[in-house]
Image (tube, rainbow, N blue to C red):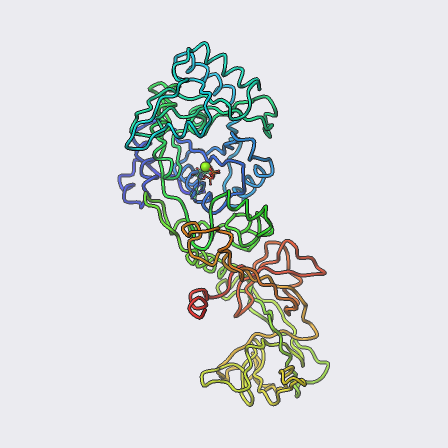
Length: 569
Ligand code: ATP
Ligand code: MG
């Protein structure tokens, strides 16, 4: 829980509030809304939440927490065609995972359908709304342009009696979808396009996941949102910049309900946009439906469920969101910055272990056959409290193929013929012989070890240039690694011409079978566990992993190699 802010503290302006927090602080200090603070996060249950939504709800819940207010979770479920309870459940789980809770303040826009309907009826009776029999295409055409006024609908001057009769029959299912809408009668010449008789209700006959077939007319966002805020007593309705132009309409509708004592205030901030991905729920749904990813929680997706499965932590996501901040300017945020935050957090949390991705067998010829000893490995040098675990050492070990070169260049400090390296946590070995198969492929190295160089022995301090990770052959456990990379090859797929699906990164998933793990990893391969495979990257067990078939997701490589790789290509 964040510390509650003392509003009488005259230094509060110097406390580094972002502009939204500053508005809230000022409103509270001025005693607006009787000192009440109530925000809301209003997802539409038509997809899983992504990291952009997290930016929104970190603000909604975060500012409430910071200033001692409350935040509602409101499902904006006004379009039954696209919505589903699966999404409602996923949204709840993701917000909880990020560490926020809405207590008993879980609401649904569909709960307000009766009040909204009553308000629409009132507006019809007052001559402020009318039924239009034109198609939505025609209505859009008549809207005009920002510099040209719109054209009045031929149905604009229907009598309130006729409008009321038609609206009630629309809701009784008498008319086909798309054949009629209810519009607010405001001003077809308004400089704000949103005031040009906006649509309030449309006919939809698909059953709703909560209200079934009770309603055949459904309110549009602009009509439902502000009213829902009002019904809930929301004081600050925080949203993204694209709603700025809707604000006058938001206020227009709310004024139909509000008295002078209370009116919610809409505040807009910039969206989160990430490089190498897309944020549109429509596009993400398309990727899922067409099988271009394995599901909403595919570890390459920008969804919170995907990031969780991939091994990202809520803390790293929050830290990234803090870094990019809340402003009034649209920006494209670099995914490298997010990845940096993930590395920074996992560095503090992940258990250091050894795994060999591309194994090459090494036989230590002067080590006694059949002997095993254990070496103690630090779990996390960043976290001395985390202790150690033991790892078996024996006559045969695996090292990475890449860590050996027969004819190395000058600055190669790993293993090569007649050269020495240290096996991390164990002995110094020297390569004596290279064994090849009939194709000339290196299949084994024969080495000797210096028995005096293990930790605790007099030769422990002896320095050699390279240190390698390794796994004992008889103790190694096989596993599969899924190596994830950026979902899109291009930096900003939404800004490019052409089909976004053609811009997917073909290398975004590589599966490596037969990696070798030290036994400790296999013994601790629980869901959510975080490991650093030393010198390689951060890994976590995938949901598909079982004790018979271990599968690990690479959360992120130790270093950002993307820029370098791109230059090579
Ligand atoms: P849709 O096109 O379906 O409306 P949406 O992404 O806006 O998609 P909502 O469920 O309406 O989905 O979003 C809930 C809230 O999250 C809204 O207040 C919206 O402003 C905010 N939000 C959505 N995308 C982002 C983003 N990329 N960055 C910050 N906030 C976002
Ligand atoms: Mg939206």
